[in-house]
Image 1 (cartoon, one colour):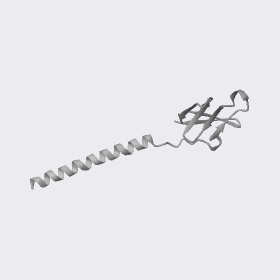
Image 2: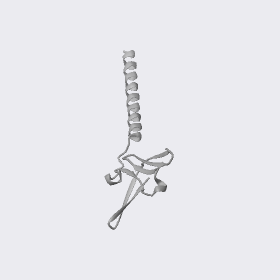
Image 3: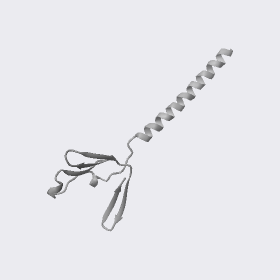
Image 4: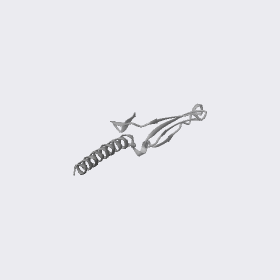
Amino acid sequence: MHSEKKERQSRRKLLWALVAFSICVVFALWQSWPKSRDVPDELVGTWRTSDPRYADRSFEISIVTVNFATGEGTVTTGLIQKIEAVPEGSRTLYTIS
């Protein structure tokens, strides 16, 4: 009878450990999962200039990153944390962080 009680306590401890572990895993996944940044469709794409001095340069926005091609095959990538939109008359000013 005493061993039955210890076995129940062991199962209960294991169950609580599994619950705590599961909560930690869910929290870690939630924090690392790509969040919806609500990047407007009109911003997604690659932007280039017709100025020949910058022919090897580009600026690309995806739904999760901003990429700067800075010439000679080099690219700098940043993850989008948030996007703010501020209407200015008939235009909208976007700030990407």
